[in-house]
Figure (cartoon, rainbow, N blue to C red):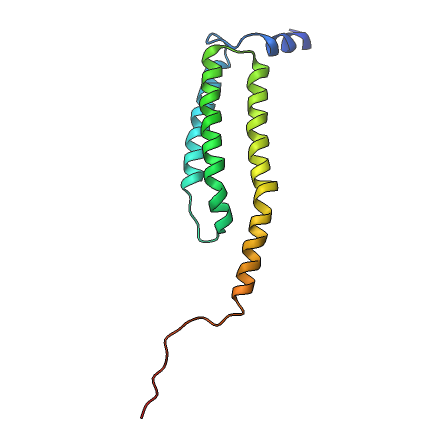
Length: 130
């Protein structure tokens, strides 16, 4: 069978239906992504800075909304390019959160940590022995 690029272009603009061989792998990929998103959101470590913990819910809920949107698009049988456009929008939002929105907050948090290092920590007062 010769390679026909026109076949792939045609498939890109045809409706995505449940008889397609890519339908169930796409549904399974959305479910696995949903599970991975929940595990990532609940993963707590001691080294995670507080600004990232503040941004994590925004990324989590935007991913949940987009994953539900993908399931709706898959069920409705929209063309594949609409799915690709939606995935690109989700990735762009997460990239914005972690590359543009988060770094100034992490820098401010780091500056505040360094500033707090100069102040003495309240501790127990020693009683003098008599």
